[in-house]
Length: 122
Image (tube, rainbow, N blue to C red):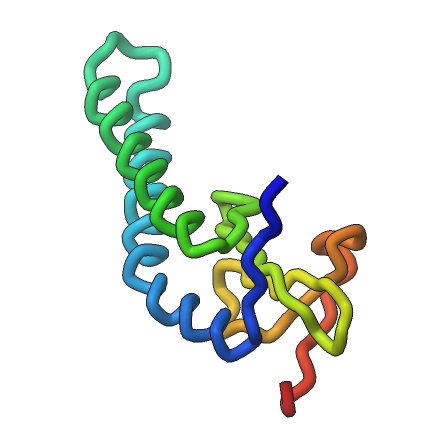
């Protein structure tokens, strides 16, 4: 099994900044898909093709994110982890939709519940 790329905090923040337009587009399309899905439930196939297209676009955007080495953990809300080494310990730098920047991390075995703030000097 190939090892995952490790990000420095600076690299992860740069990648997050570069991904911002992709993430914003994902959030917009996700809302469109949710609204369309709600409007066509219980109806005929009207809108099903459009919904299929929206879902394909969402999957394509997530592939773009994953190609950077970022791990997508959730779609709604968006939750992403950046594998990293912090003071010699393997951690996941954690970004949750709505976070202003990359300011959290957790051990891989602790998951989201183990999120801790990054030090300001990191």
